[in-house]
Picture 1 (cartoon, helix red, strand yellow):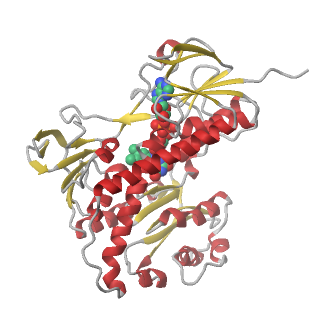
Picture 2 (picture 1 turned 90 degrees about the vertical axis):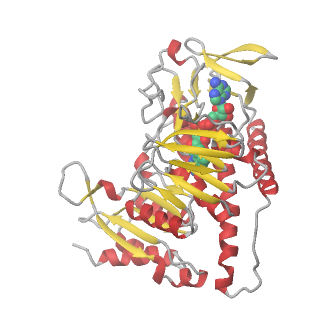
Picture 3 (picture 1 turned 120 degrees about the horizontal axis):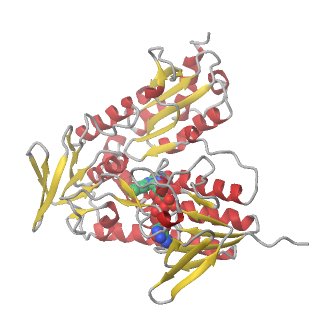
Length: 466
Ligand SMILES: Cc1cc2nc3c(=O)[nH]c(=O)nc-3n(C[C@H](O)[C@H](O)[C@H](O)COP(=O)(O)OP(=O)(O)OC[C@H]3O[C@@H](n4cnc5c(N)ncnc54)[C@H](O)[C@@H]3O)c2cc1C
């Protein structure tokens, strides 16, 4: 006797939703994805993919501007063709969404374009104004509806001069005087990119330093790089309102000071995109900010309803969204499943240089003997002495490793370097496999290479062996 196929309904076709759909299809389930804006989600269409494409161009500009120092003559002044730049970015995002759509179709996953909501246990209602509503019965439901840019009252985006990052790619020029409000990851990435592309950038940060949540050495280094590049960084400056008068925007700070520019980019966080999803009626618990509460296998408070990605507010990264979605499906479909380990997530801030981190952070380290914190040894090695860095003509950056004092096991690290996002894998593997500093130190690194600094930092930690 063959068992009936399990029915899975997924709200949202971003990384949280489409990666889950692929896993569920692989396990033989009958899968329906309801998505309103296009497969790939905000990740592919407006957030991660477009911003990283923009940053590729800004990195190329940085390289070109450094070329005279590398012995290349006649570099001239390089400028950006904004229309072409934004066209390239949106084309690339659409192409990526098409690739995902093709992949989903190849797996026989049903896709309904429209808005979806929960409607009682085991039911999703999906539809749009043209087609009307349709009911989908499901054995398990995954909510992966993402998040929206937070709007500061008094600083509402107009899509022309006061912008969220999702509106940047509709511009027809490079903002000549860009004010970025917010110095978290998104603000820092765009400030870094636009400064390199040729905008005059002012970064308005409400905190003492940029990237307040990140490794302090890394954040201080980046702030220093920002200032030396000509960027104006306003620390301890909280924006109260943003207004526009024709071609000028004015940011008013809470202490009454004002900053003027041609455009203002608001990067003040995200709010969950769950309105109209029927969570209340279904009894799905949300936290005080409205994010869906989930456990480490993505279960919500309602049996049979799972949630993944930005709508849960758990580490807002595409890689985490995808893993939460997969874990949900493995759990729902009776596979063995490891609860998600957030302490092992590798992440990068795509400033120039990039900041990549994995594992424990300096903040969590035991230096004072307080209970409940992690004990670790730290080794920080500047890249200035790395031969490959010298050849490439950059000095800023470092490798920092953390090890357990007793065993020498790698607990994590921070790398600040061009392409640190690629270099961090060595530290991730070491951490995942519980390698010791000694084992990492004994691993061959190419000479000359930036990764040579990773093994060198590990060698220095061997000096600390108990
Ligand atoms: C500027 C920026 C840069 C970023 N860069 C990175 C990066 O470099 N690396 C990284 O890992 N992460 C990055 N992120 C984070 C990453 O984009 C998110 O973590 C990721 O998009 C979360 O995926 P998701 O599936 O939860 O949601 P989304 O990608 O937002 O997808 C949700 C989907 O659900 C649909 N939807 C919403 N409501 C409904 C409904 N009721 N019915 C049907 N469909 C619905 C939406 O249309 C959308 O398609 C970045 C974020 C930002 C803002």
